[in-house]
Length: 426
Image 1 (spheres, rainbow, N blue to C red):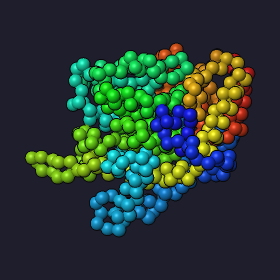
Image 2 (cartoon, rainbow, N blue to C red):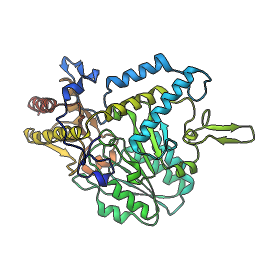
Image 3 (cartoon, one colour):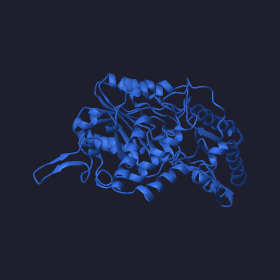
Image 4 (cartoon, one colour):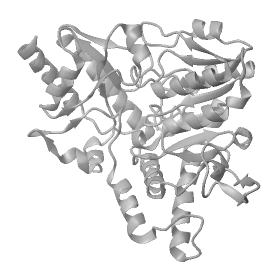
């Protein structure tokens, strides 16, 4: 979708060769998102919690409604017209995701319930490949969903979990990475973009170095895909995972991309209908990829909705989105000094439009509650990244995360509201 100066090293498809874009028509885009028209506590909604879950355009709602009204049936099974329609819509969405990621085949695209399940699927499947003395390498800025599954894998296998350090600015310490990476490293699992800091990591570089020592690589793309269109073949990663709901699609569905050879080697994660080829009381054999990992009736409408969300994004100007998002972030950064005692957590050189912050004398949860009274939605707490909070010595932060449908006026409203809170309570 968009591009920063780290495009090549972070692995997203770039826009550097695209023609110059006209300014993004944000007013027109906002009309595509009906939820943004409402009032909260008597104020026009200012939705700045996009890092937690992005809002859905009308075309996504319509696609899911149309599926239920005109196409619904179970997939791959019904010998009738509705079954054929549902299967075509479901598998069409898989092809849309394949193209979005530039995967080599739809056999490499597995539906999951979200990023968390996708990581757990891989971590559980790799158990037999690790033993005592092996090492799993993650980073200090990971979401809990990219920490705990690897901790559990280390406990099951006897492997050691190692952690890449983070700099005070919120960037991965590449010297620490080089020191931690070794011939014993079997798995590298890192986030493409930090959910707390907004940092864009040089994941292509990390993947290349990990591959050089024979390690498998998994990238958590949950926070990247709303801003970038990752090219998994260019990245060279073995696995890439993300959730629909952060990509302006529905909740309850996510994606695991895995290299076909590796997915063939991994054992199934769950068992039941759809993922089997043949069952007898003596032996069961598994279905072909990707269905081997898709037990039970899938989230069909949600897959259709995700496909519609990607189609919607593909219709927007990537360079214009890039400019709009970075303008929002620059505007917010420029207003920090207007709030005495405000400090931004994470000042990396390359960021998506995410601002985590603290204000002296105010607890993050109080900031969130008081902003909500003024119609402004942000996220507060540890953001499922407790080790990172410990690193910065804070119990949590307030986080404003912007999307391309946000406006400069909404940034002004955020800071005007913070000033009001500070005058009243500090």
